[in-house]
Image 1: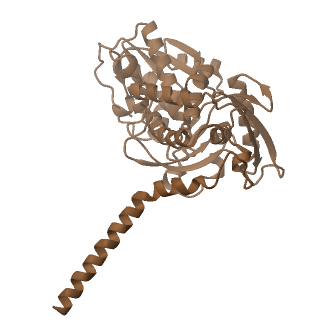
Image 2: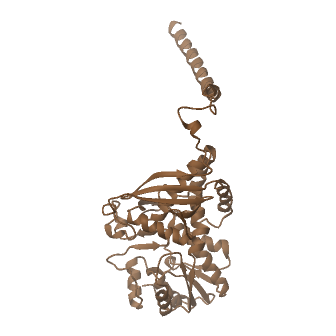
Image 3: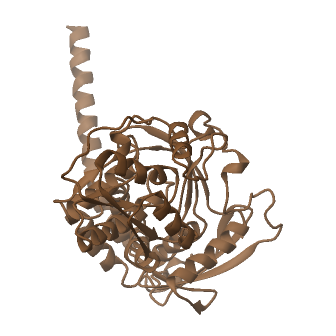
Length: 422
């Protein structure tokens, strides 16, 4: 247990990013004990599906003077998820950035609440060796650099989830985590992540009890399910021909993909702080949307733009993962991405079967696929004789280099012969 220290009077009111989980549950009484300050809890609804009435009551019972419950789902999707999707941002080839993208929208609203209630500090429940501390605090610095930041995990003597559970029990705070199943989970409308517990010590397949929102491929339906997604300028707008709201669209795709065992990722990743971690992620809708968006771009973008955009996607994913959302570079990359998406409009149909995804159809009014050129039986649009000229030009540097190398080899061979006969 963390020993009580002398109060710090310069902190009068602090706004805590509150989830109701183990870490933030114990932080409220800890802040009051160690800083002798008023604690305001800010709960951001990014689609985690919590009982917000119960969370509000729990926060108040734990000592929060006020509790704000903010519905951020629409903003999260349209202002963050869609931008990353358009960019094609995937961290280390597998992680669809569910937690990474939620942190800046939560931090932004937390700062807005802090400014509105005249707080002089903000706090979070991130550990000192994770990525989220970076994401929250870089957002704070970008949006309200004058606010003091309190990170209890970097101050108190609690060193494990077991210690935190003991602290919660001593303060009569109910928490869902137990010493028997100490998974650390983060859920929003885009994904559900699982860390800790056996995932820390085992690098093999995650235990069955780790997965929560997706069906096991072994027990998924024995028939393929087809789903059609429509896009306008790179933004998802419809499912199976019906235009629906962004929230409903993701919820619909989560259900159909999860039922078919799609969206599970077992990943050893490189954290920003230099530590490798092992986690399990479930991103059913995101898996489908990224696959469909990629296919549509392959149809609508020219080669040079398509290839260069893949480089941008890698950098964009790193910016998001490293907590650098509120930066000039990310905004500049958004401008590039937005330009590339002007003609990424159309529909893609995917087939889902026991965790697998395959393309059944793709179509777009801006498709650059031309059957008169692509077919083996070519028409007048493509003269095969033209290939000789561009191959000669393209191959000229290679040809000259080869000739020079051959000339040098002959000269060296001549010198060798003269030495032998000399």
